Length: 120
Image: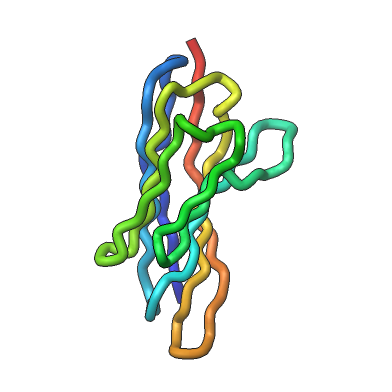
C-alpha cells in the first residue's frame, strides 16, 4: 500500500506565499505523475498542477505564473510553491500520485488534504 501525506497548509494574507509538500511512502517502485488538486467551498475539485516523471509540468490557467510544482524522486515528494496568493486560492489542497508498486502494476493514490486559507 502507498500513503500520501500533505503538509504546509495554513492561513495567510493575500499576496503572501506558502509551500505545500506531499510525501509518498510504502510499496513504491516508481512514481509516474504527481498532481495537486484543490476544492473550494461549494465548488468541484479542480486540477491545479501536474508534474510527470520526466519533469514536464502543466498548470490551471488561474495559477500560471504564480504556482510552481516540483518533485524530488529520491524523497518521493512533490512540492507546490504558491506565490502571490489570492482569496480565490482558498480551499483544500490534495495530492494525487500515480504509482508503480510493482514492475507492471500501478494505481492512483490520494492524500488526506491540507487546508489553505487566504484572507485578510
